Image (cartoon, rainbow, N blue to C red; front, side, top):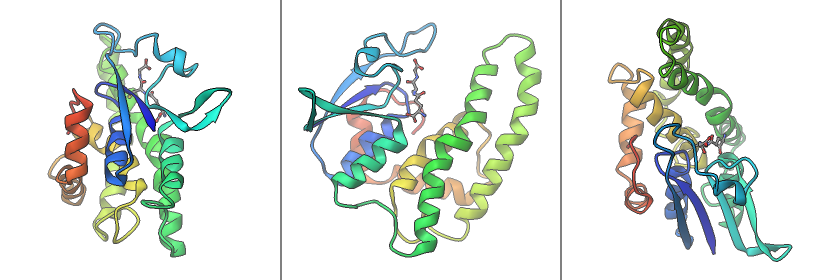
Length: 214
Ligand SMILES: N[C@@H](CCC(=O)N[C@@H](CS)C(=O)NCC(=O)O)C(=O)O
């Protein structure tokens, strides 16, 4: 059994969605953000030293008398693909497999940093607003890149949805909420609508509690 240490309004919504898609049993342990700082509560540091979400614990895989702890969304997603015998994993063909690896890393490695920077700068008085003017063009470059990719295929790796799509959901939801993604990039919006219409996504949303991006 998997326990998902789930912080409200966070990246860990992706892990709930993936578990629903795979039909694996899981339990949710919920955490609320500090209302002032928006940070995770200190209890999360008892699960993993960074105290971030998502983190999972898998009681089927015991290490020193405790379920294995896996942090970092991309690592969790790959762990779950293994556990589900490759379901939602890389496509068999080389081009699709390389796309799979690329987008899986790109989500947190390239697209999230400028979005996060914009969020943080938005909270900095005075200097923040002018600094955002430099960050927005970086976000726009990412959004154009994603739009061009999705204009020629239904999912990030081709014909079928994979864990790479699950990874990309959070940056693109964040981009729609505060990064300037709108109807001027129709392929990306159509992809987001397709994601949000999936029954597994909606079940995960109901179970996860507050989530401002769907
Ligand atoms: N790259 C990491 C980022 C983890 C992360 O920063 N999680 C945020 C949630 S969106 C968090 O826990 N924030 C609260 C905090 O930093 O205290 C991942 O994808 O797992």
